[in-house]
Image (cartoon, rainbow, N blue to C red; front, top):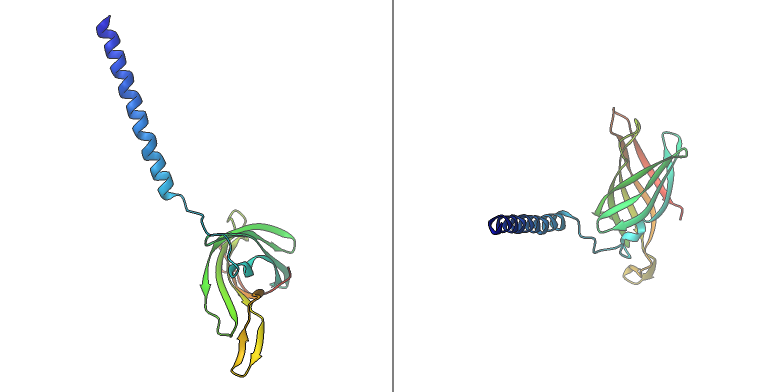
Length: 168
């Protein structure tokens, strides 16, 4: 009987040690792989937030950017009232006009609709300016004003150029 209870105790101990050693590895792997969301929207990249309107193939297009987290962008597109979620990443982009700031975003629709695709859009904001003897001086108050880019369908050769204006 002592021998049987010793075997059962050793087996229980081995099983509990094995299950404990798996969990920390799992947690470490998950923590290492999971993105770290430390940076929220900055004063500069906030120029992307809001409602943008334009046309795509003679239809009303609306892009709404609802949230920025780190280098990720979340929102939706609406073409003639048909809404599709979009998400993607952005980075700082070049724009050769004084007192401007630009960000380029690649925004993907889910892909479960025949007409889904990817938007590549450059969002541009401009600061208020003050004229000085040395030319214009940027004085802050950066606001998103325009966006341009293209949309490419996942399926087929469908694509369209875009020009959007900030509505709100």
